[in-house]
Length: 280
Image 1: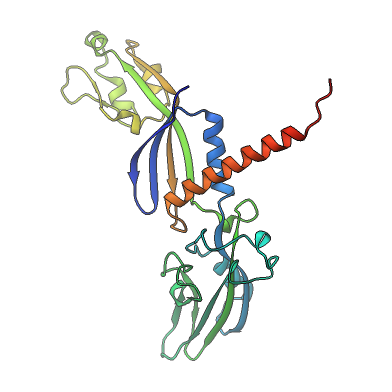
Image 2 (image 1 turned 135 degrees about the vertical axis):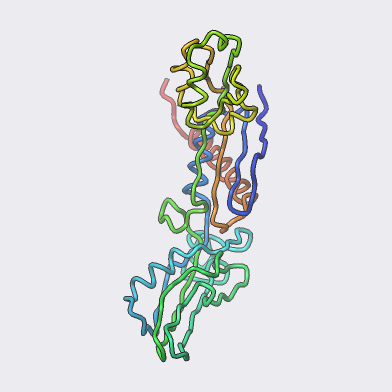
C-alpha cells in the first residue's frame, strides 16, 4: 500500500498550498468538506445593544459583529452543546466582548473592531481595522456581545477558512522534435492561457519547468497542437491543495483538528456498522 506524502509549496499566515500524494479523491473531498463545515470556530452569537446613537439599526450592527473573525483557542473552549453548563454560558464555552465609545470630537468618528474589549486576550478580532459603524459628535455606542464556538454547517460565520479547493496534479508529455516541421511556429506558446510554453529562442518551444503549478488541465495545447506533440494527463492519486484563511486558527490547528474529526467519523461508522443486524 502506498504511503501518503505531503509537500508544502507555499505557506503564510493566510495561505497554504501543498501537494498531497497517495490519497484517493474520496478522502481528499472528505478532508475538504470537514475543513469547510466542521472545524469549531469562535464567533459572536449574542449581542445586547444598550446604547446606539449611530444611523444604523441595532440588527445591522449585530449582523456586522457576528461576521467579525475571532481568534480561536480549541484547547480551552468547548462547543456549548458539549459544555457542562448545558450551553447557558460559562467561562468554558463563552467569551464576553464589550464596546463603549463616546465621540468627544467635533467630527464624525468611526468605530472599528479594535474597539471591542474581550475578557480573554486570546479571543480577539483577527483584524483590528474592520469598520463597524460611524457616530457623530457627542454620540455614544454601548454594546455587550458574547462569542461561542460553532460549526459552519450551522452558520457560515463559524467557517474556519475563507476558501479551500484542490485540483489534479497535471503531467504533460512534450515531444519537441515534432515541432521542427510545424508550419505555425508555435501556436500553443502564443495561445496557452497559462503561458506554459516558451518560444523565445524562435527554434523550438520549451515546456517551462514548473508548469504543473499553473496548468489548469484545459487541454488546449493537446487539442490544438498541429503536430500532436503534446499529451496532457494528470497524476493518479495526487492533488494540489490550496487553503486561504482569515487567521481564526493556524493551519497546524486546522489540519490537526481535521484528522481528529475524520478519525472520529470512522470510529462512529465502525460502531454503527457493528450494531446493524445482518439478515442471513
